[in-house]
Length: 165
Image (cartoon, rainbow, N blue to C red; front, top):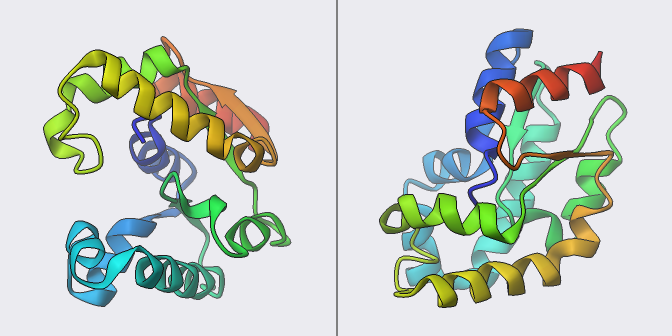
């Protein structure tokens, strides 16, 4: 969350002339319901099942796409293997420090349901640190890691292009 996956993904897709798809947006369009509403009404287990289903659906697309997945996507079921085992797929981890993520989330906290209830910078920092710690083993299996602290999306996209081509 807040590492720049969607922002950089959109810019990357435009730059290399691919289609861009945000997995959460795709799920919302297919389910006819916002992700937060899916969590509220059907629960996380249901969401994680359909997340895998739609990820598999995207992998069958014939066109070339840049996909931005949620921060939890690689941590559930066999999603990480789905992401890593594609013939032409490249998985990139946009790595931000806890401090960087807290700064970014503080600015847009109200737009992020998972953290909007956290009142202090300390509680936000704890939340981010806990999630990064729990997910680190998954994230580090990406094909490439790009550090995003103090970088503009434009600079991050340049680094991604250098990795891809």
